[in-house]
Amino acid sequence: SGRPEYPTPYSRKESEMVSYALIAKVKGIDSETFYNEAETKNRDLSRNIDNSITVKKFGDDISTSIGAGKWGTVNCGAAFRWGQAESSRFASKNEHSASLFATDAISFETLPVTFSFGLRGSVYSEFDNTVNPEIKISYQPAPQSKTTRQTGKKDKLSLSFTYSRTNNIPSFYQRYDKTSTKEPNTGLDMETADNFSISFFTEVLPGLSCGASLFYNRITDRIAYVLGDDGIGRYENFGEVTYKGGDILLNWKIMDDLSMKTTYTYLKAIDEDTGLWMACKPRHRVYADLSYMPVKELSIIANLKYESKQYTRSDNKDSVPERTIGNLRVEYEPTWMSGRFGRLEIFGEIKNVTDKTYRYGDGWLAPPRTWISGLNYIF
Image (cartoon, rainbow, N blue to C red; front, top):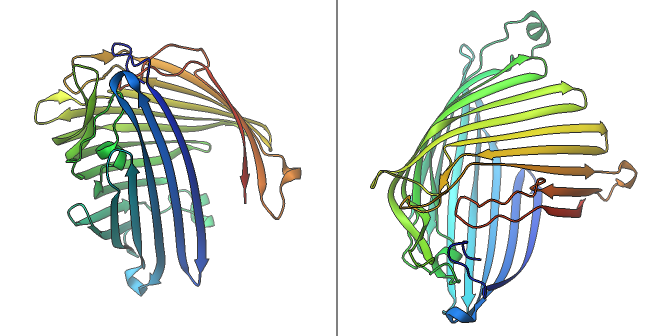
C-alpha cells in the first residue's frame, strides 16, 4: 500500500461492506433512508500494526414542496445523520448531526431572470454548528427564432451566477484509522468553503452545444493528506486554500447513434499560507467520452482522461508527470428481460486499456490493465 519510494511489502488490508437504502414518497413528502456498515482490517507485522475498524452510518433525508404564489415554490426539508466507529485500538466513537433547509426560486414576468436563494442550518455533536446560504441568479432570454416563438420553447441559452457556502467534516478513517502509511489525527476540524461561479451554456446548432464557467473557491481548514519523510503521513487542516479556474464543455451528437462529450478544466490550487501548490491537483485536465449505440440495447463508451503534472507532496518536493489513460466500457440491457419487476443490465469494462504504468496524484502506483464485468438489476 506504500509509495514506490516507501514500499510496504508486509502490509495487508481486508474490507467488507454492506449497504441498504429505502426511497419512499407519501402525500408529497419524499424520504430517502440509508444504512452502511464497513469493516476494514489492516495488518503489517513489520510495523507492529494489527487492527480493525468498523464504521456504521445511518441517515434520513425528508423533503417536500410548498406553493407560495407569486413567491414561487419553496422546497424545504430536514436531514439526520448518525455515525459510529469501533476499533481494536480505541473505545467506540458516536456522532450525530441534524439539519433544516429551505430554498425558493422567483421568476419575473417582465424580465428573463430567475432569482434563487436558500439556507441550511446544521447542528453537530462534535463540531461547530453552521448556517450556510446559497444564492443563484439565472438569465435566460426570450425566444428569438420563429420556431421557438411558435412552439413556446425557450432558446437553449443561459447565463448564471452562483454563490454557496459548504462544509465538510473529516471522516472516521481520517481521524482514527491507523495503517502502514497513515497515522490518525483526532484533532481534525471541519473545513468551510465559500464558492463563487459564473457559467454560460448555449446550443450552437442542433446536436451541438457548448458551455463555459469560471470559479473561485476559498476554503478554510482544508483537509488534505501530508506525507512525512519516513513515508508515513496523516490528514491535516490547512489554514486557507484557494481554487481558481474555469471549465469548457462541448457536447456533439455526430450521428443518431454516435455522440461525443468533452470537458477541459484549468485549475490553480494554492495554499495561501505558504504559496505552495496543493497536492493531487493538476493544472490541466481533459475528459472525453465517445458513445456508440448501434442498437437500442447496446452501448459502447470509449473514454480518454488526461491530467497534467501534479505534486504528490504538500511541500512540493515530489511530483508525477502528465498522463493520458484510455478506458472502454460496454453496456447491454436486454429489453426481453425487462418487466414489471425491473430490468437487467450487463456490463463489461477495461480500465487502462494500453496497460500503462503510472502513479496517481498522491504518488501511489495505479493498477495495470484491469478487466471488470458484472450485473445490475434495477427495480
